[in-house]
Structure formats: C-alpha cells, structure tokens
Length: 146
Image (cartoon, rainbow, N blue to C red; front, side, top):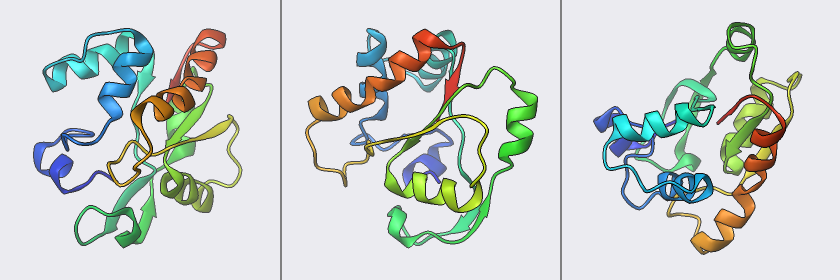
C-alpha cells in the first residue's frame, strides 16, 4: 500500500527518500526519469508493471507496521488478464507477508526483495545487488511485475 506522500501525489514511490526509482533506473541502465510519466514509460519499455498486493486497508501514517483491515487485490483476475506475467517480486518483507496471507496458491514464482523504503537502512549498493535477480527473470521471460 502506498505511503501518505505517494497517495497524495497519486504516484507510486513518490517519497523522495524511497530508493525504488533509483534502483530500477540503475538496474535498467537508464537515467533517473524526472517525471512520473517518464518513470512509467521506463517501466513499460522494460516489461515491468507495478501492482499493489493490498486493494484497501486502514493505516495511520506510512509505516507498513501500521497496516490494518487488509483487503487483498484480485491476483487471479490480474493473472487471467495479463497472461505474460511470469514472476512476482515483493518490495519488502511486509509486502511478501501480505501477499502470502492472501495468495497462498500463486501459479507464478514469487520472490522477496529488500524494501526500498528509507526504513530499510541497508546501503543502496546492497539493495541493487539483491534486486539484480529481477534482471535474470526479465531475460528469461517476457514480463514480471511488483
């Protein structure tokens, strides 16, 4: 579930300290796009889509630990509509935990990646090294999403 800043902006990963866009741009060997439209274009050109595990919830602030009353998104419907999805990557342990609690029988491989949130204080270089596994899936398959 996007944080407060992202919800206000209507953009994924809008909080400037979140490293998602910088990590993806580095992995894809792209310059960091300046606008959200350019960021979405970068993802689409590389067969990457973003999707929320959570359709709705209640949460005070932006911390994942405050997420309550979760209603899961319709994974089955998504996979039926977009048949080229070959893998799912969860951005952080909370996303993985929420995903598994709602989708225990997923027909595509699910991978956990370290959170790009500033709450995860590991160095960006370490996160980039961990996130490189998406490149292997992208090379082997025709699509994946987060």
